[in-house]
Amino acid sequence: MDTMFQVPGRYSAPGTTAERLLTLHQAAEALGLHYWQLQRAVKRGSIPAYVPFGRKLVRLSEVVAYVDSCRQGGVE
Image 1: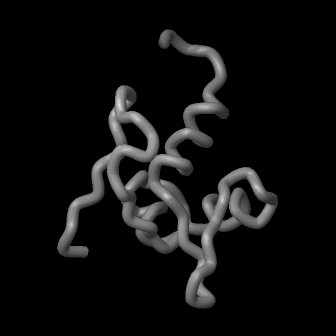
Image 2 (image 1 turned 60 degrees about the vertical axis):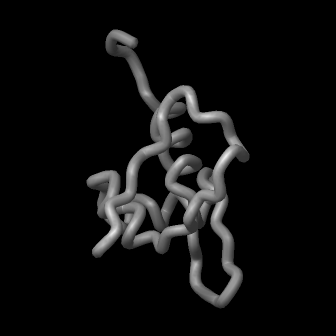
């Protein structure tokens, strides 16, 4: 992968910049997740997916938001 993907910052306003859509493999690799974990979350509707050309794509910010919403315990 030539381009390094950055996780959107906590203070990034949604809609201020166009965000690149990633394949499930690219998003999983960028966040250090297993592909199948991301695939299951998309399949059950927890993470929105876009299918413009027959291939499921996700926004990295939406995946990060879902992972953060599942956080349990710990210090914020």
